[in-house]
Length: 57
Image 1: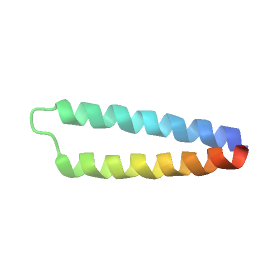
Image 2: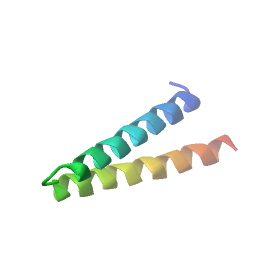
Image 3: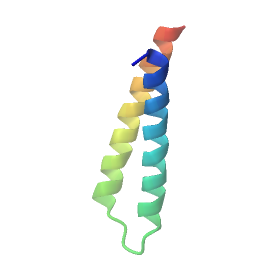
């Protein structure tokens, strides 16, 4: 997998987590633990995207 493919994959995962967080938050009784976990995953992905992007420049 090329670096560009990895970046695209991470962006897709980031967007999917964003969507899942929004969906969970809109439920009548949202699972705050699940939301917090998804936010942590999203942050890890964003950090990895930053590292990958900095190596391409």
